[in-house]
Image (cartoon, rainbow, N blue to C red; front, side, top):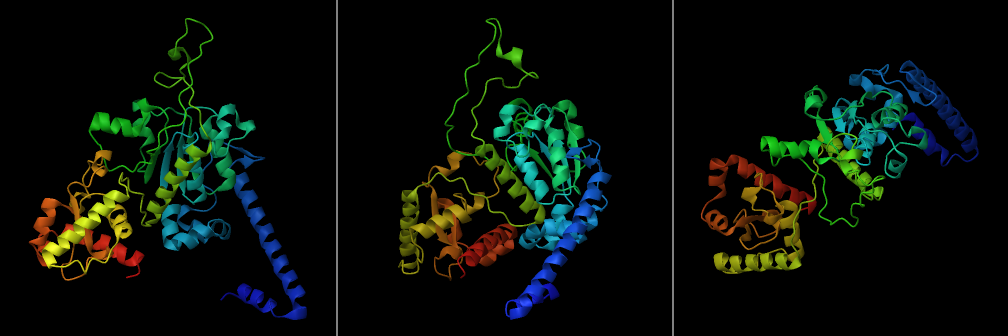
Length: 413
């Protein structure tokens, strides 16, 4: 225990000495605070950040990225992250490089939290400017920023929040002509926060390259409550294309509750930060099943146990635990389909061909010993042994063992 911690413990029972100890602690704290203020002021001034303004050519601060966390100010600013991730994992975040394309309601919040999480280098890309109407959802913009390019607006504010971060702000449209340059430099993550379909990374990956899976996506199954507002021209002969800033961009207004894009941006930042830190991140599986489906699977398990073992006495799960096994462990899919790219919603609408069976036949049918398989796969599984699977399908064996180990940990088995 550090000397400072000992001081506060002693103060709790020191009677008359408490005033002197408290005063000393406060003076020490104020002294450290003064030193930090001086350091931050010097760092901001050395990087062109004075009176709330940031130059567009700011370089990395006085401290190199490799030893940022050894600095007293930086380590205290990121102390909650360090406590959450651990020092080694936080170092991975601090040494990372992330590109954020699109800096509106989603992108500004994603970029802001990545900055506050200690990401060491950010490339911020957007061709648009801050408008009055965007202030209901933007992460940092103020009225003084209206008319300012969004990229430069973020850089200005970010430089005052975490001046050690290397921030490259580009007032630029992401399109085929700029793609190679923007994506160069081997970024650890690229966040697509673009609100225009024609320029979205995900759209072009599918259309032009045939890539339909393997890219994490934040989305909602909810149906939108608001619709596009009708286009209103100032002149009768005008069309929506007359109002486009660049070809292909939408003109009609989408009503936006400011909290919603912020939520999406925060989820993106949470995913990226945990991935950078190497922390296991379990996303919510997309499964369109209800309690009746889980009850059906529970009944099938009981019938299967009675058929194979002559009794269902070793079925140690109820319908709610079946829900955990199916949804959380196997994500509504056969254990043998976990790596397939075809992940459309149709795959989670039915349990007609699925059933649960024991992984290890020598153990009861509990939450940490059940795998979800198709009927034909279940028959094949019952006719083989774990030793055979381990020998012939080592990757599959390791994957199932890892998933079932998670159930052991989460159920404290």
